[in-house]
Length: 116
Image (cartoon, rainbow, N blue to C red; front, side, top):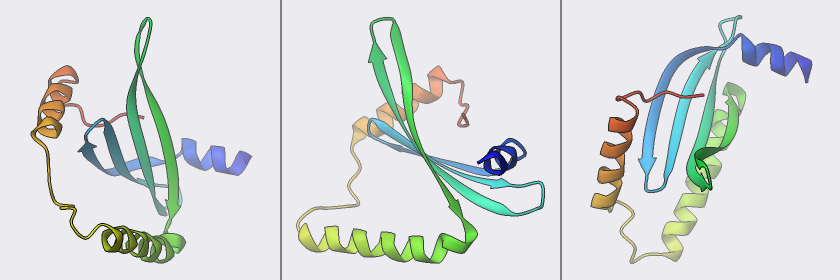
């Protein structure tokens, strides 16, 4: 556990992609370790409200290179199964609400796409 914490503290951000999806935002962050190894973190963020304002609830997955193949294969299988069970659903549809939320978030954050 201590080794995990030490490696995490030394990680350097290499690449980040934000995906706004309705009330959720997903972050795909590539990080490098001190030993020039790379891994991916996938973070789901949801804006939640309290009496005194709001906060972001986050869930994070660390994905290491040796697991990429198994992860992608299983993800593709799961998505194919959902599509098979919902043949009439348009999985490419995008609502205008998503774009409106995206624009508002960018204005609130001065266009800053990164957070930890």
